[in-house]
Image (cartoon, rainbow, N blue to C red; front, side, top):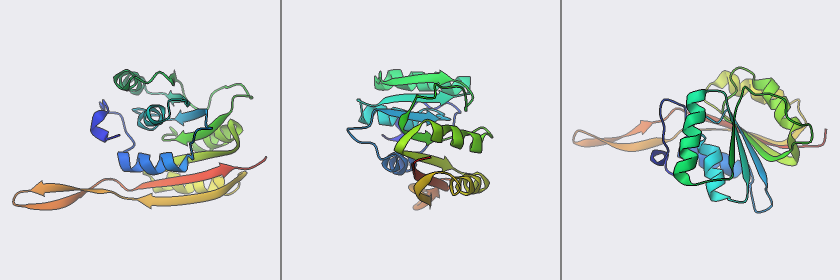
Length: 189
């Protein structure tokens, strides 16, 4: 989905190229049933998953009221009914048996390691966890924590996308912020 199809406001959004890589790393397929999108922002990752995989139930967690409203507006715009939006600060109480096939963390609100641990509790065995960062300190904190966690296939990538723009009589590539993407698979505890 192109970025410009989303209703934006002033809420952060995972850009299309980063979404493509992140969704690929989530490893979703026809057997996947549930995705948790933590720190959902505009909901771009969860909504694109819901749109592309209508059989997957997406739960989007967001603490910012404006962002929650944008997720609901975008949900209505795209006509996806397989998204539940929870206005809350993660981590929060979920039933211990509540398990997801994949979890995406787009924002942590300063609770990063707690959210990672909480996510691993609610991730199915062999489920995929994917995290996005623009701050290197947060990416390094997550990587250091995950290296001590029950995960495999731990990977970290940095991508930067630049888009072609006209400037006067010439052209240039306007850069987006570099984004660090971390992905892993849950092992037995």
